[in-house]
Length: 109
Length: 112
Image (cartoon, rainbow over all chains, first blue to last red; front, side):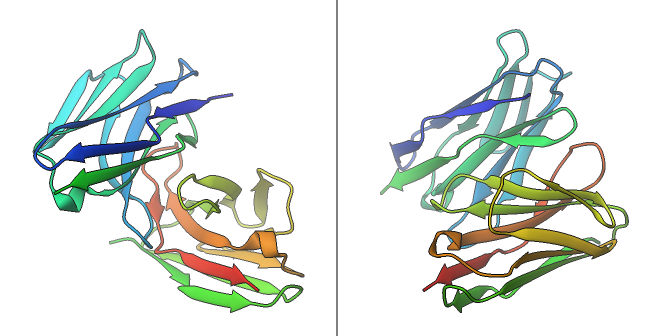
């Protein structure tokens, strides 16, 4: 079955710098890759997603890249701000979402 | 628009007591429904999912059970809670086909 690995488990960056979180997946049939942000005490919320027919997608300071050959995808956050501090989850899906273990992003002032 | 309601937000229960967490979805029909747990505050562990009324799939053996008595209602239950059942429980729904999942606000369960 599908397996999704996410790295790093914790990432600390200076405010204003960029943050990159990486995920790899095992099922080549996976065709949908979302990223979720979870703030403390709340449920995760979708922030950006990408489908397998697209290599990159951007939404303001957030971008996701997908390399189907290598079976990995990444979340890029530029000009990080304190409100970006949260836990981020990647997932891969063919029929059902398979989740990465999460990355705790800490933005240092 | 679609909304998901999950309650209660927090719950403190003694060991050995029963549990019932309820989740309802509005604005959609025939959704996939999910129960997740975050025991460590980070990873999402899928407990149960349902593709229709009365259809429940269990991902891990445990002290919990789930039921779907109506199309948009999903219930997580236990007859006797254990200390290890403490955690943050999340209900979620998606349309058929494995696309975006929409999460409730979660229930923080503390078993004492």
